[in-house]
Image 1 (cartoon, rainbow, N blue to C red):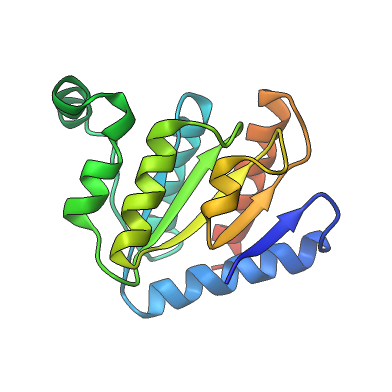
Image 2 (image 1 turned 180 degrees about the vertical axis):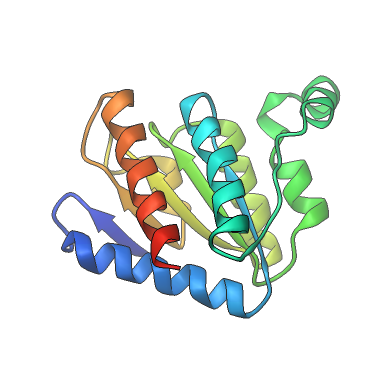
Length: 167
């Protein structure tokens, strides 16, 4: 199933409710949730890993250990820093939340492909072009129709914060 929200496709309250339902199912099935992103989206990912663990009462795990990231980047290349972790840590039914303003980051795309090969659900939050690669390959995708990093990242953060508040 490829649900895509954004650009006027659904009302905001419906999007938030749908996202909360996805996270709730993952929580009650006691599956793991991973948040990933680069730059400002990485900051959102780290923040949400903590919030969804503490306030959302979910099983989350940060993929941002600096020693591990630099090891993987050095040995495999930066485009594999998330996919190598997903391959070794995740299980069928887990949830990967990929946050990417452009939807074009190769390390995010590789992580999604690794996740899908294991049976991990993929939710993405993207912006910029509506047909970006990350959005195309995600199971659930929230799209922000804007071509500027600041507003896109702010809206991604707002959405994820509002959802965890509902949990």
